[in-house]
Amino acid sequence: MIARSNRQNGFHDACALMCQQAAEKYLKALTIKTTAATPPKTHQCERLAQLLNAPATALDAARLLESDYMESRYPDAAQGVPYEMFTDTDSDEHLRAAEVIERWVLQQLQPTP
Image (cartoon, rainbow, N blue to C red; front, side, top):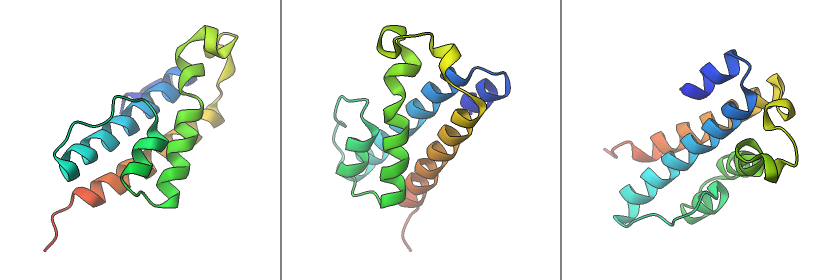
C-alpha cells in the first residue's frame, strides 16, 4: 500500500490521505458488489460503512479516517501545513484503521459455501 511507503518516508499527511482513500475504495467496491448499484458520491467513509451495516470496529475505523481527511489534503481546511501536523503515531493509527476496513470488506467479499 502506498500509505505504508509514505509513512516510512515521513510523509504522514499523505499516509493519512492514502489510508482514507483506500478505505473509501474498499467500501465503495463492497457497495457495488452487494447492491449492484453505483455507490454514493461521497468521501464519508463512516456513511459508506453505515450503509453497509458494518460492525462497530469498522465504523470506528471509518470515523477516524474521515476525521483527518480534509486536514490531510487541504491546507486551508487544516489552517496550517498538513505536512507539519501529522506524526508517526498518526500514521500508525491511520494504517491500523485502513487495515480494519480492508479485512472486513475482504471477509464480506468471500464466497459463501
